[in-house]
Image (tube, rainbow, N blue to C red; front, top):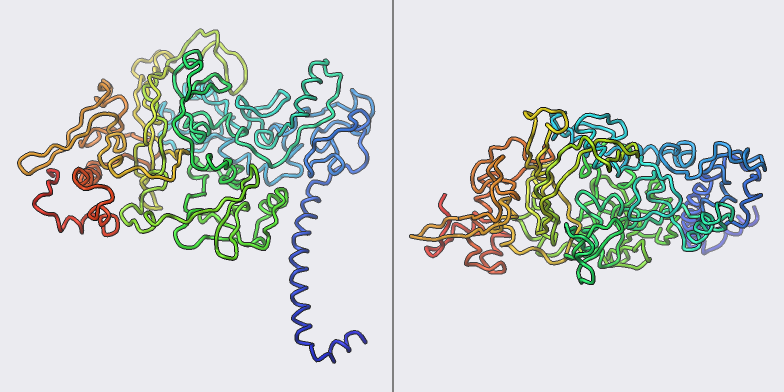
Length: 630
């Protein structure tokens, strides 16, 4: 009490109070940070805190991540078994040698990470719902591609068998059954798919263990942590639209590895597929990993059952490359998952704002805004600080392309495969069920005609969120030989479907105006010669395709739509809200293309169309302008 009286009599009392408030605020911040650390440790406390018998044999082990150390959580938290017995057989009873597969995750990883496991079980990487839905739709087993499925529940219909034979390898429910690190050939593995890491010593110890007949026990244990490399993503995401290989700049070919021996510009990956270099993504050039952009909130999901991948991805280019001011969040407002990532990454910028994704508000904890309102990203690969640039002036003042996605202009290239024939073999020596992991007698096989790469085509996403122009690639230009499966020739079918795509081949430079407005591939006509012919004061577009016409629909093999003619096909896309340009939109695009025959991209006239719109500029055309015939 005397101490308090002395303070109250002090003439500098106001300054003392202010000082106490400041100190108190700092202490509260520190307490909050310490609380996260304490709670994070509490989350991993072993169910059984008494000394386990495991360490009687497995001595001097190291390599564990900080929060999965046996001293903190024991061994049985992950591997189960009997921790009270020193008898090998008894101690190993009901032991899980490779914990983390979804089949045992509830009893292993899920004991501590219950919320994360729930999200994973509902994520598209586990259910493959969109993959199943589109396949069933194309095979005529569903009237829409917008039903929800789980690939683990499929049976043996024609579509189901097609998935089992060609597609069912890549889902998180696939079991990891062999020791070793995640490689380019890895598929599935539940929690291991992203979180398992082997050091060089752990790999060496494992090799010695296996060569010794499992007698020389490893001293270094693999780590289970949040340090996810691009190799973790590669096994599954180098298939289908081939995001992983595209990101690195590689385009798949139909060449054999012997065809490219000692040839520059080609690479043979671990599965023996041959790739040609086409140009890497600018973010890959900077050394950024997949998870620098796609955080745990997207990768593990949010617990909702999405139909297709673009619905599950909430991140947008403009979340980092914003137009005016960034959307931010403070450290104090981070959710539990983000706080844990912040802690495990040992970040120190809890006093700074971080970027938050506009669509769902999830934070990008590896970003921060400094006192000068400059935004930076901390690379998760090496900790390097990258300056994040605002949206360029060209984009921000462009009113004509407000409904065009960033990747439509900034993608260097995208894969385009055409001519896929699917038939069923009744007797095959190589038939293998990818879902059940066993050899069978019958299988669907596919024969691909050609792999191409080019600047992507464009399509229209139209739904209750509005209208958006997005990149499009051939999703399914294929024939299905139903007769070979069920004997019904009347069911044999042909489909020409394009799919929306997000090419991870982004460059700082954008495609030029002609590459959209007078490029037949971009508009959907396929490869060929598109020319603007003028005579007697009138202009007319002509198109000659490079590929022969497919007898099933009389369109060039690589096309999406006919040239300036109404499309007769009722089903044209793998999505119900994505379509090609209609004739009116094609004419509007080609009208600009006609202007570009004389006016350069950076001319005053073309720049005015970006800011004022084409209609206003057309009011001032001269007699020298020859526009297309309506």
